[in-house]
Amino acid sequence: MGGGTTSAAFAWTNSISSTLQLPHTLLRGRSQVGGSKRFTLWCVNASNIDSAPSPKESKMIVSITGATGFVGKRLVQRLHEDKHQIRVLTRSRSKAQSIFPVKEFPGIVIAEEPEWRNCIEGSTAIVNLAGTPISTRWSAEIKKDIKQSRIRVTSKVVQLINNSKDDARPKVLISATAVGYYGTSETQVFDEQSPSGNDYLAEVCREWEAAALKVNKDVRLALIRIGVVLGKDGGALAKMIPLFMMFAGGPLGSGKQWFSWIHLDDLVDLIYEALSNPSYKGVINGTAPNPVRLGEMCEQLGSALGRPSWLPVPEIALKAVLGEGASVVLDGQKVVPKKAKALGFPFKYQYVKDALKAIMS
Image (cartoon, rainbow, N blue to C red; front, side, top):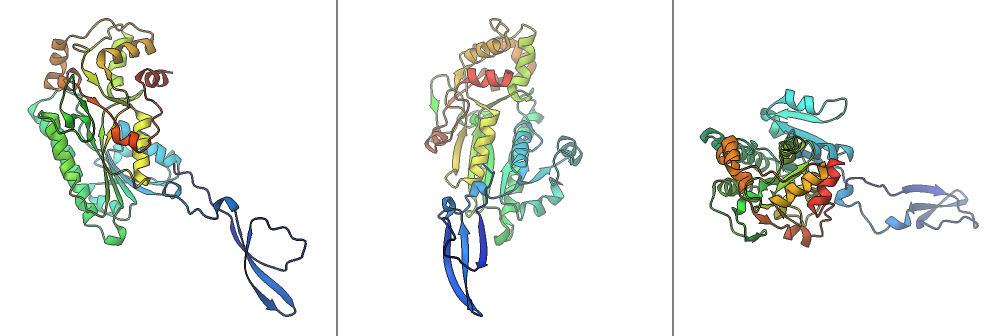
């Protein structure tokens, strides 16, 4: 995506000899100058005669919240590699500059909140990934921040989009949400049509999505309900790998809870596709096609690391460390990407064994 090709289109005015071979040329007209006849010819690559540049081939201007996070960093790298213009919407310029130094990311724009309006207006698309991490011990204050950080940033972004001039308003908003929307179950299978759950995280996701749904109706909205993102340098694996390397890894809790995961590269590809493909709209589950029980996930991780995974981490130990936040790993949901599969999205990593092998290699 994003790697454009340009068709050859050169206007020539030239005298034509009867021996000239022009296999990919269209004759457009002729004029007479002095005593010689001149023809205007347009040379067109035959393979491109009927094709205009696709949206994927166009260069985008993308403003991103949460760009300094685990997913955001990889998305910025991907967009930068493909020569798109990137505007990082951040609360900390110094942090963003340390992650995206000018030497490695020439042309990137880093903007703190007072400057967000100028960045959003004139952008092609907005990607909203901001939010306080949930994999921590929850206090009443943390729970409030988990919810408010998501709703506040999403509401601000939507307001700035809606207040943009009509001819400068972004055409697309990709807004993150989470599979926590569905609540938890060991028996149900959830797709995009499934109802919301009744717990705290489901409530957070409902209000988070409701804020995004207030965007101008002329703006294409994709809500990506993201599962557990697997990658080497962050997310859940960053916390699990050290345990396994110390021979202390194993199932968390019962190990029977469902683990709906997605490889970081697939999630970034999904967001990237949603930026340019008009078919990507509404709710889309950002999960791999084959969720697994957490016990199997831990077994595959141990295998990929060459470490045993037989020693379970008891539920009481997790609750001691994470408190109520332990519910993120102790409870789970089986979520399938029905919409992405219907759209033909090509998952690189459909099975957790392959994903972990690629990450650990």
